[in-house]
Amino acid sequence: MTRLEDKIEIANPTQPHCALVLLLDISGSMKGSKIEALNAGIQTLKNEIARDELASKRVDLAVVTFGDGVKVIHDFSAVEDFDPPVLNAGGPTPMGEAIQRAVEITEQRKEHYKAQGIDYYRPWIFLITDGEPTDMQPGEAFWTEITKLVHDGEGNRRFTFFAVGVPPANTRLLNRIAPPNRAAVQLTGTFREMFLWLSRSQATLSASKIGEHVALETPMAAGWAQVSS
Amino acid sequence: MGVPCQDAFAFQSLPLGVSFIAVADGLGSATRSDIGARLAVNIAVETALASLQNDNAKSPLTDIVKVAAGEARNGLASRASADGCLVRDLACTMIAVVLKPDEIAVAHVGDGGVVAQTERGLQLVSGPGSSEYANEVVPLTSDGWEQSLEVVHFVSSIGAVAVFTDGCQRAVFRKSREGSVPFEGFLNPIFDYISQLPDCPEAEQEISALLRSRKLCANSEDDKTLVVAVIRRN
Image 1 (cartoon, rainbow over the protein chains, first blue to last red):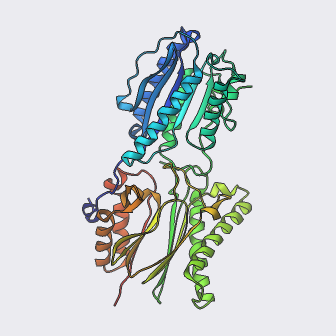
Image 2: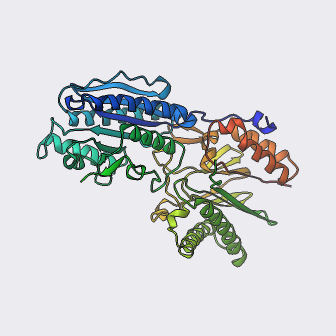
Image 3: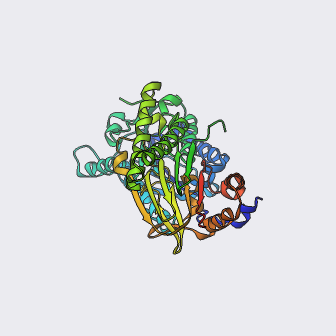
């Protein structure tokens, strides 16, 4: 210990936090190998973030699923307390309502950080789907409401929204939901590769200062996705 | 970890009781921000020094720091075109300070801050910008830097001043509804201790050791710069 170190106290010894919502399609079409890969991918994400000393203190994970209803199956927690149940596929694809729910818990989380005096990063909402919404169609009022929620939220920097289509997802529709500045991507690699990238991105984010542009490796550069058309 | 320190500082004290301090924090997302930060602080201090010498101390101090920050910005743009890179590759924050025993002028873009010890206790002279998120700042290299530029003129009988990058922020500031409040428990022991030391090299060693200490590194992995100026009144 230095002499000066003994004399000082730290004003605000809390870590800044980084909220990540996994917004997962577990509709009937995800049955079989896809839902297994998704379950394994979530474990990969947890383990990789836990291995990163800084990210493990800073990243808060939540999971919202849509299939047989929309559920917050795991509310925000630190990685060490992150223990979501095994996901089972079934039901339709109420993606609109799920997006609404994800945005809602994200805003609540930011309020919680503010109330606690915790610094935070811009939250991420990470949508993975293999289909198309069954609760909203272009032209409907609910579709307009949800796409506006995503586009305004991203545009006003309230959160960062990623949309990933797993074949045979309707990527044309997905792209209309995704924010204009960040096109939806199509999964071409494995779920594992995608979740490894997600954990690396969270580690980079939670350790850095990004200013006007984010120097994150893109999914395309990482090799697990291509821009959907 | 193979990444160069992206903070830089420069200072110059004149015999007439005027000092210049500049600190800059190179952005982690910019590939050559260490070069940008170093260049920006050197230009800022040289510019402030030249302005003061050229006009016989007639300009308001706020003009001196504003010009210093502007020249630092111009210098980054020139360097970018000379090196064939983008100006944002050199992205950094900037705090340019002119300090006299009874006044301080600051030009500030981005985060970090300036705190003074005065007769009324610790006073925030210039704080981090109001960005909602912990890692997002407007750097000196952004197109909108002039809108984000904060220029402050602070008048008080000053005992000591701390100028620091965001790596020190969580040590220096308490969070309150009113925003960032300077914390006595961190800064006062530093000011008191440094003012008792006989010379600069020893003080530098102590600050450097503090910034590397476990207590500070447990709270911020970021590069940390802390410049402490103590006013000696005889």
